[in-house]
Length: 212
View 1 (spheres, rainbow, N blue to C red):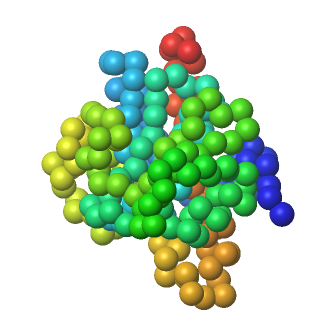
View 2 (view 1 turned 45 degrees about the horizontal axis):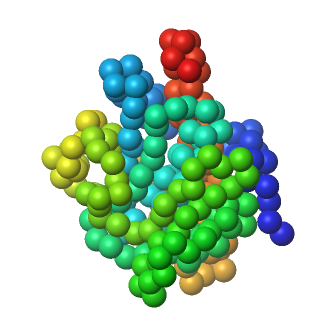
């Protein structure tokens, strides 16, 4: 049974308890985003994970959803990796189950490109596995790694304005187990919750500066 995306997003804010350590990291990211926004009134965020197939894709999609939900102008999320693979089918399945619509933009057996939309979507999200420096990833950007396997060295990321680590447990470890659906759904909920916390805070601060 499919779930309404907005309901899922709201439930994630109520049902997931974000630890103080994670809140501290999210607040640090928010500060960097706000500093850049106040300077240029525009911010790009690039969520990065080696294969750009699961965690970084969830973060890009929920990040863009949150930006739309909180009506933040001139802000966009992208994702990339150090190698090209594909937007994993389990990622697609999990997001479809909470109301995201996937339309194939460019068919490719190895790495199809999708336009992802949802109710009240203002701009479909372009999603496919790509390198950090892909032409569709706007720069300069704030880099946020979602795994622990990326080198801790900001110059690795072209045009990186700031660099943060926001790691999540890789659901790939459960792809062929009875826990697969549970672990993907858990990750989906956790990332939705943290993107709500991050961009909700950013939106409230921007409004206080009377920029919205």
